[in-house]
Image: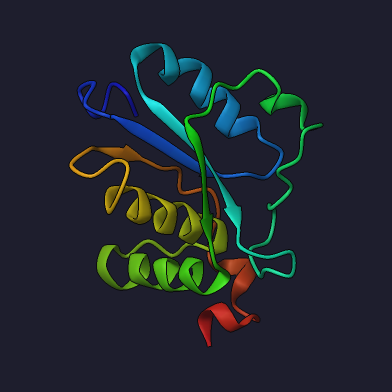
Length: 134
């Protein structure tokens, strides 16, 4: 993502699952001056599968130098996933939607005017039987 952007990425955000992707990207992009953010769900009973485990004992995140965290709702994650399908043809799930929703929040505030990179970390296929794709 750094090379593909020509070094223009100013921030990165990722929904916290095991913390591996977030920690790895932070280790690479952080020294380049890129601010990295974790994304957490807004409540314990969220529909965003595969994440929301932000806790002190996540091994990968123990040394990650994060700029902060962003909180997203399941509704915002779903709307962002649907937006990706509608406008970009990217059929993704809740986690990817959470990444986009977090990036949108950051672009409207702390990272206004910046370039935020996210990962498309899941397919929408496993969500066909959920309310994500009613």
